[in-house]
Image (cartoon, rainbow, N blue to C red; front, side, top):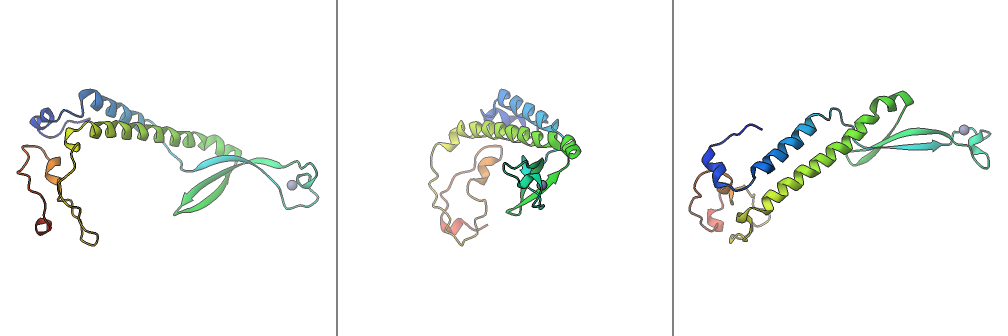
Length: 164
Ligand SMILES: [Zn+2]
């Protein structure tokens, strides 16, 4: 991970610690090795065909397949496709990669959350009043805190000062 910003800023902030930075770098390296990722889920699905006299309609039925059904959400709708045996052989790793990626993202989120939780600046509630709905909320409140250097004098934000 390249270190950017001035060093004074990094010594002022206790967190993230060097260990936390190393953890984040390790997770990023693992993500970089994943390769291709397919969304959705694969299920093995026995199927019935349309021929009434087929064995799949017998009692007990001898169903076809199982077929490799791939479902995923596209714009809120479930999209279903079937993969052939050789397609499954080619792509099944990509579904495993999806799970691996989600695990790693979860680890990175947990690590990042721990850093924020340990930040003493987050302990007290801001004295400012929430911006009313309808008024565009630009990121003026607290934005200066994310930058390096000495904190500017902190004035409570009154509606008259909320403009950008
Ligand atoms: Zn059949």
